[in-house]
Length: 153
Image (cartoon, rainbow, N blue to C red; front, side):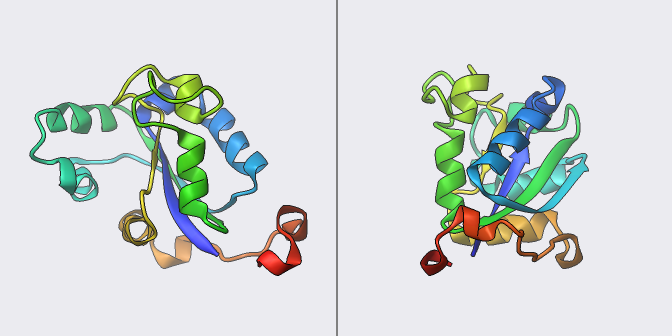
């Protein structure tokens, strides 16, 4: 099964949306195999958003991501990267479809509730950035065959 990284951003924490986002992940059938709260610093944000360091909005992004702790999660499932990105909606909450996490809870391009890995390769790099191997649990939920048909696994 594929893995992806999810980050509940400070705006989600400050707005008490942790339970709602986790509920949606669980209801969709993605398996949470790692989860922790942490305070991000500029060093980890520069690595995580290295593709944005030269953008004029980067200092505001760093500032907003350090306003409170975040929740980082490793999610597992078939096509987990694509499934979770579809759940999150467009980056700009004003353009995100209703029913998506950002479409329902965000009206901002930056204060957009959640980060979702954009590829399998980036997901693995991001997971390794935020988690040690012993913090990720490779277990099979008892209801796995209620999520997937036997020939899908």
